[in-house]
Length: 319
Image (cartoon, rainbow, N blue to C red; front, side):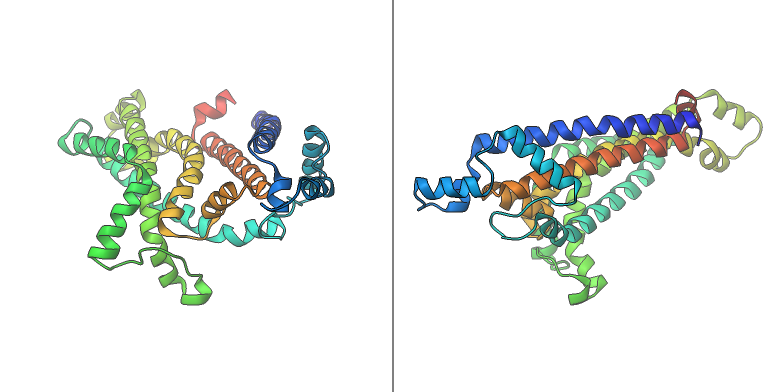
């Protein structure tokens, strides 16, 4: 990896810092605009004096900029604060709820990408055929239908009518083993991955069609190269760049989709924690979740950019 690429990576990483600051500070201001944490901690029956005492104890009587800077200083030391409702460290709370969401997201992304590559390859090598038109139409439907509705339909079909999978909940591998644990995640992963798969399939199909029309493919065929060698040796690698970019952009969709899917399937993950914290005005947890989501999305896009640079010689030349 050349110095120009390393410089580009450094610039992108540095550009993420002001975005993270803007997102977290904006969230901090909005949270205080919609509620008063001191009132939440003091309780519904608290007197104004008790609320003011809590406000001073938590440092909420200071200007909001100073409060944010204090929170930011704690974050840099690995401290996201204390939950107002759970009475524990936000970092510990996030670590507790992270495994189900992480497994669900990885499984959904794996199912989506493998299926998208398989279908995109099948139709991209023979564009404008009956199968191509049919899959493109179905992909539009998959993108348009909300994932929570897909989840409800999957529960109805494969947990009630055909009781093949649990209707909801989650069990750790230590409780039931790896196989039964995955059975709790199959339906939610499909519900979460359907729209991702459809978008990826359309992107990969379009990239394959474009690459097959390129001059180097015609040259390879004229030299007697087989279709297999043309695809695996040239076309698939060059067509993968846009797909990787889309996957990086889909991380944000994956996070927001997990909020609703976990609610439908009663999975105690980050999505469920987010909904509970927003409803309960647990401001430190919400602020920590926003910082986590923003950091994950930016890191995923940076990784996607690196993979594209590795896959695409033209992108490396531009870098």
